[in-house]
Image (cartoon, rainbow, N blue to C red; front, side, top):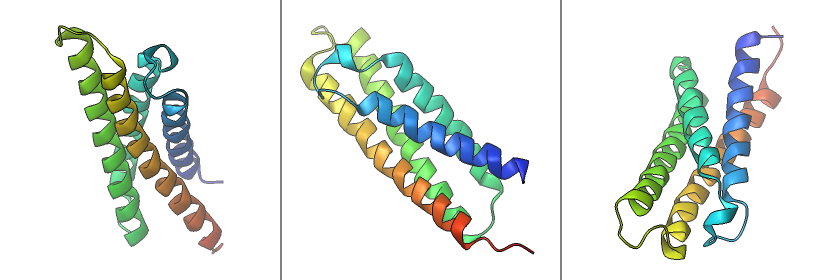
Length: 128
């Protein structure tokens, strides 16, 4: 067992599950989307992105690209939430929440692609 691969797989799966947990629920209801879960998804996605920097293979490059997309989308979702909650005089409305969840759903798609790549890489791995 390779500990580096375990840590890498752990963070990729944790990023995807946190993102899924945040997106789950009515899209415009702020009570169903916990902001701390969004922040946790951002942090774990950034950690997963950093872990992917060392892989120099082609599939590693695609892993890095998907993780960068997910991280950027989650950061943008968090910024939209912060702006709506603390800057907009109307507060966090259903329209703002729909935007935040939609952007986070895009990040979820990137995380799913990353998991598919991880499974493909694992299945194609040959023992030496």
